[in-house]
Image (cartoon, rainbow, N blue to C red; front, side):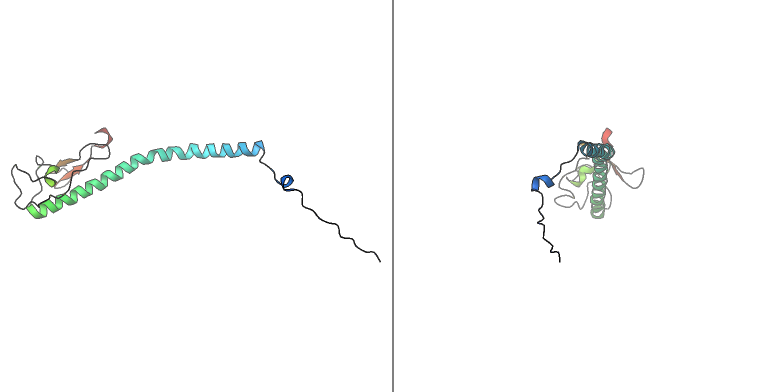
Length: 138
């Protein structure tokens, strides 16, 4: 009868099992990253302008809400000459608001995201009042 003799199995030393990337593999990854960057970067670069537009819309809504509160207290919106400043300081030119809220309707007037003041018209062209930004062109 034949006897089986166990043959010891050894793993190769750790260094022999490690294998690095070939130059071709590295070049393929670099090319893929380059293609992805070419597609993604232009989309990311456009986002700041979209964020400014969203911020301007939010500011306009907040100003319109403050103007609505002003009207509830004083029965009319501020005139175009009184402007948005009537939300921060009590107007002194007619019509002087009879029930202007102490402390005002806003702490301060915001600037639009491009650094310009918001515009105000009473009567408005699109409704009783218009609050708008001139945008990046100022």
